[in-house]
Length: 336
Ligand SMILES: [Zn+2]
Image 1 (spheres, helix red, strand yellow):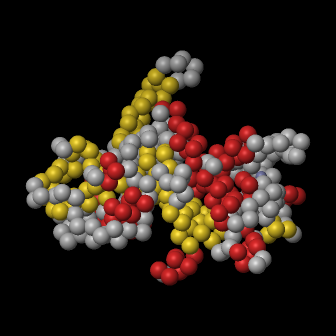
Image 2 (cartoon, rainbow, N blue to C red):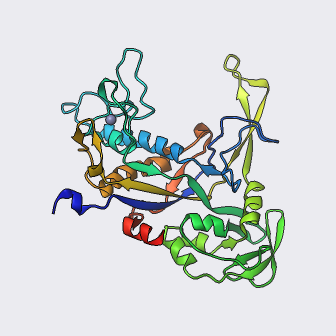
Image 3 (spheres, rainbow, N blue to C red):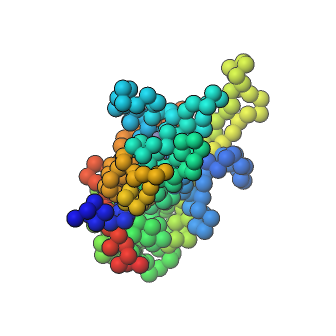
């Protein structure tokens, strides 16, 4: 059996992550309504999300940091970090930028802007979906619950229906009413097939699984958008060290304990060439996945998105240690 036959052309790995801090992945400062710095939203659902490009960018940086720690300076002169991180710009003297070598884990897995001697770039062996909101924490008079909807669950491959669009479904719902923030809804009992098992499979902790509140997609969007964190901050004048006149600004964030879900598609390296040769740094989709995973501990420590110096952005990947629920090509095509 040759190497090529031993592997499928891709593997999909699905992850859930828990916001350890509020997370702000901004749109670039456009003012919308009462908030100066808004977060990215899905155009169809109006739900906040984190673009896959943001995730790919921070993981690239973190993997480059990890690679640099293990670099043998005799075997390789140029550093992985910062050269192979970032967007690959060269310094003014022409040095730096993505190395673009077949043996570089960062450049093969995350791609590179251009090869040596300004040859064509490479798209990278790992592809990242957007990070979608799966479970959203909301205060109620009975303590926090994690709200979700059929549409939010579908993104995680979970099929769950509801009968009444105006009710909130809970594990032990008993026909009372429950407030989700300012919204008061009648409760109904949540009858689930594999919902709780699938959430457990994604690594969602029991204290969250026990406090799921399922609502319609329409209500979910309302509940989320009226319970986002809005913080007020003030710009500091660098010359005086005091607050600038009129420099008060507000920004939105996903609250701490939000749960996001995303997919990483890892391609089979043997199908790709860099320049005239085979990719050498990784040999299988599993190898590609192993490289991606090295960035996850950094995500929990250094975070994603803006306002990192204001205590924002840290994200704990829930399933990284035991290996994510891999879905093979055969399973994916069988469902399509
Ligand atoms: Zn490189």
